[in-house]
Figure (cartoon, rainbow, N blue to C red):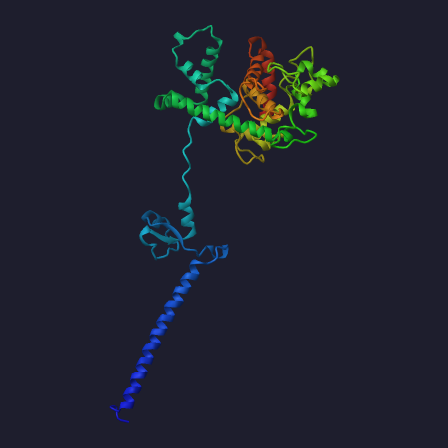
Amino acid sequence: MPLNCPDCQRQNIRQSEHERNSAEAHATRYETEKQLQKRRWSQRSRSPHHRERLPLIVPRNPTLMSMSEGARVQTESAGSTGFVSGTESEHETWRKRKKPDIDPLSRPARHFGRTVEMWRRFEIIINEGLRDPSEADPADADLRAARQQYERLVDICPCLPEEIRTRGVKEVVVNMEYARARGRSEDVKRVKDLMQSLRAFRPALGADEKKSRGFNHPQIGRLLVSAQKVKQWDEDEEFRRRVKEGIETFRPQDYPVFLYENDEVDPDNLLSGFLRSEILVRAYRAVMLGPSAIDGRGIGTRIRNGRGTGTRSRNGNAYLNYMTDISIPSLSYIATVVHFGLSSQKAFYAGGGDLGRFDYQTFYHSVADLLGPERMAQPRKALLRWWKVKIFGCL
């Protein structure tokens, strides 16, 4: 058939149109499949099986590229954000957050509150410590104690003078008061929640329940009675009723039974067994060493060798503050915290007031001042040696 035949020309045109339509359909189908695959890729499961293939985002940085040499790096860009895809290990490296700056005054202030002074304001301590000794009144016992406490504070926090020069007394006082109050609140809550672990009470105590404690509990009520009236508590039912109803009260200077070893009081010698009770020892370990050290397993090894081989997962306050000795104020601190944990009072306050609150500030100083005079040097030394064995496992 001749090439210029009209039928041949129409057939060639139809064939060309068919090929062109087929090519366009193939291209369209290819683009559609590619888009579908891309959409499926973005909607893939986040399961561990696909995690290593997820497109992760890391900064476009020459330093990072040199660090990730040899790693799989995608070539496609993330637009105007300046990021490219990378491997998970690169992404995790850059996801690490910088640790927040910690105030160098925070930990010393907490430790000072636990081992030196629980209540006296830092403003008084620091101002008295900065005062010229020639201007001080040697007859004022409180200011003399404040000067001694300032010297102890500088020993605990050597950077304190520099911080005062740099930041000023007001800012230093505010930060240290806040840190000490936070540490005190944490210790109070810890001991309160662990009270059933410190001693097996029957009926058992709830961690957050306070109304069943105090004189409402048959065992705890006896522990809170003053040493002078424990015999009356044991024998007189009417006396117990008056105590529970609040008719009979006790002063902060009346030392309760829980301070004595085995809950036994010698009426002829009130210092016999004083501050040697098991509940105080276990509470001291919980605050200074950590809750897992309550039973005293491996305490000497943990303190002498750092972390040690004990079961405690975090370093305790004694290790963090290089504590190797016991102080009388620290025993008074633990006694105050334990007293609140045993009581039915819901909130922890320094002063008593007219609302039936116990005066914990007076109680703290009464316990600390009992063994403070020079005439009590021998009993004080024997007590501290006994406590050092109990807490640190050595002399």
